[in-house]
Amino acid sequence: MNTPIFRPSSHPVSFSPSAFPVSPLHLDTGSHDDCTMAIQKEPGQKGVNWSNIAVGAIMNMVTTLGQPLEVIKTQMAANRSQTMFQALQSVWARGGFAGFYQGLIPWAWIEASTKGAVLLFCASEIENATVAMGVNPAAAGLLGGMGGGVAQAYATMGFTTSMKTAEITRHKQAAAGIKPPSTWALFAEIFRKEGLRGVNKGVNAVAVRQCTNWGSRMGFARLAESSIRNMRGKSEGDKLSAAEKILASSIGGALATWNQPIEVIRVEMQNMSKEAIASTNRPAKLTIFNTFAFIYKENGIKGLYRGVTPRIGLGIWQTVCMVSFADYVKAWVKGPGK
Image (cartoon, rainbow, N blue to C red):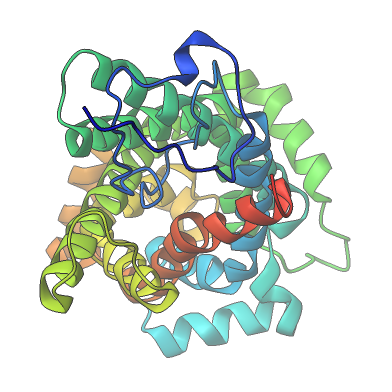
């Protein structure tokens, strides 16, 4: 019988019983390295890797650099008769260059600094649990992304997206020289009139959007990774280059915008523009279904896809940040030799 040869590992040695594989031969397929949103775990690690939760918050803060695309997308979804050029003109008229960053401080920063951690934590726990039950890893990742998206919507995104949309869509011009209320005054006014339900207006639409967003992004990105491997003649265990991972993430982010009607519905439910409030055909109490019917009646199928072009750019940017760049940040957080 040949004597097994043990080679030194770059990973720290753990003396936990779970650190030793059952089989004397352990093959690293690289599947965890390329998993889009799951929290990475070292061999023998128990529980959650908290540093990756911090990475989720950091990378979501980076995604807020795409706020101009968010503003344009929201402007077009709320004002569905406008062209891209007209939407750009409207945003510029509201505040020039600063108009493209409405809703960034504090709401987008509050949202970004919390939703990434919630998404990563929940997606990882769901994925681990479903894999343990024998579910296919790809399907488990899809379920993890969907569950994580729903969790982040109800935990942090309801009131922040509502307030971002309110900031972008409400009438910003001072009437008769009166200074318009600040964002905090607007928040206090909505909370006083409508309570938690008011500041979380449209949260169900946000949950549906986030569920389909991250489920689609993860699913399409993994499918793209497999296709790239096949075209390049790489096996499943071969790592993708940085350019290949960015390409796969870009494909996933672009294709995930198929759910644009849900985003348009979400924006309409949170719309505080003068035109929306004054509309006699708009339902007094908006739900996902009656909002869908209202948009379809007013603007047809085309209206349900208003703002999809800037959202494609935004989706690509967010997916590249959370799928591709996050791996490098995780390595930096761990530090050399860790």
